Amino acid sequence: MTVRVTSDVHIGHRKVAEIRGFASVDEHDDHPAADWRAGLRPGDQAGVHGDVVVSMLNRALSVLADLSGGFGTGVGT
Image 1 (cartoon, helix red, strand yellow):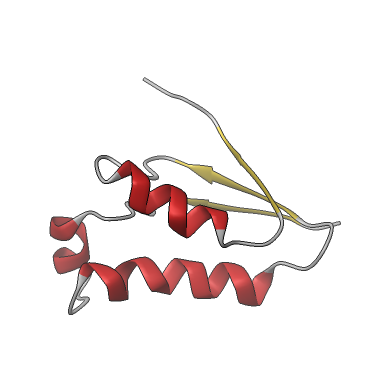
Image 2 (cartoon, rainbow, N blue to C red):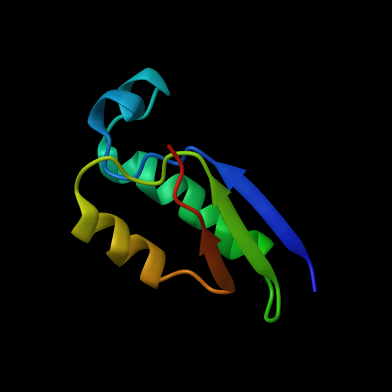
């Protein structure tokens, strides 16, 4: 089993997508999802530290539901 950690994916965040140089929010959101799919294998675990989503919760849940591997995150302050 491999444990992978990422942070601050900001799913659905238009301004962050713009700052990061993506042409659209969809392109921005697809990028970490593609990395996730390419890097995780059955039995692997993944965690996200930092902001996953600030708004657009339904969109974030849709993106996350399509990812393989276990998913873990924590609530911070």
